[in-house]
Image (cartoon, rainbow, N blue to C red; front, side):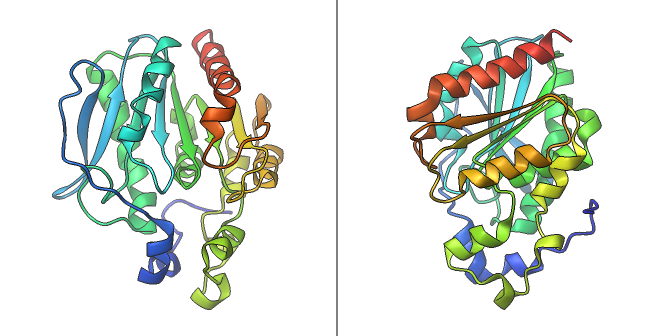
Length: 268
């Protein structure tokens, strides 16, 4: 069983692996969202800040803390945030080190440590700004690792979980990216352990996955769903969709699943 603070991600922090796992894009910032969003710098270490865009609409509504995929940045979600807002959902999209206007350079070790500091900040920000609704943690693709880390270690602080295009096991994904796990000394049991972490989270959970995902197969979504410790859980297959067109092909189904979870948690 994984335990917080005991996982050593050194095997994944090799330069030849990091260049395949992370694809950061830089942007100037923080920028003025002109009422559409607030761009915020979240402190995670001395002189290191993570960029985030908070699309906030309803002080009593649910809030999604969102960790995106490895080739994305928070500004890519400037159209998705308002869609969630129309459903009464607040949307906090956060970057990784080296992405967007964030400081630093991304590594697996810092990604997995920073998500804890980001949750701390998001909770305090909500309290300070009088946003009192439930907290949902959501991760897409690589971001599923951050979301499931928090689900396991801080589950008592999270009201719901959404995993979109998430991976159950890292080994097959590494091989697809051109990395031999044995060569770098990566051991699945002591790595991300997503399929083990989701077993520990017992609150309402939604798994969304593309039917024909060529990067993280639908079978990973099924494995996460089967392993989930939640009694209230939903698996959403987006027909005909691939890893990178899931919004285009399944947006209505996607939003229906997210809003269904949000409404359920708001009525508790």
